[in-house]
Image (tube, rainbow, N blue to C red; front, side):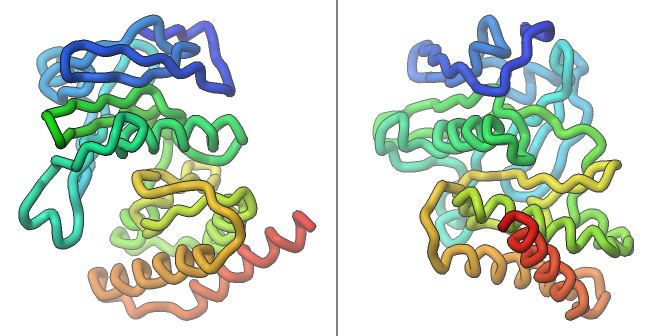
Length: 251
């Protein structure tokens, strides 16, 4: 299945077409790819599902040959989700959500930014619409900030590490427009990762950076309401301190 004895920092994109399905994958990691890999049923029948993360765009954790992968199906959010669950308007293959995210992740991973390595992405076209899925490598030993907060854990100095990591992405021009506590992971060594770049993109300097931070602050306030733990202004000051410290240390 995978080329476990060969690792590459730079993805070698390859495309495979079978009928109305098109798959983009990393030739440096895989000899071949199959559309069935994007179906949870395929892994379930082989008893290789290790878990499922609920929520919009739910993720399925599957045991591949040499590592764990995360399989995510694209679902609509917001107002449109009331009418259409997972179909998107076709604007060409390169404009699909899965291919855009795969290519962005490949670029960020090549730059050494803390993101999951992209494995493969699939697009199924149905006339003027399509559905999409993506496979990424599982980040071992990680937990989301959301799950930690709901468990009543105190992140302490980790807030400053989060702020510094966000600044690292911003300095590289990475806009994560859906930045929230579910998309920030921390591993057992205290390292911080960002996931779910469905709406992410590379941009020049601008107000979008503050927009990212405000989105995260709203997410923290919402989580405080969910957990019943009052929003802590000191938490945000620590994030800002880490954000500014990263800028100073990089200058």
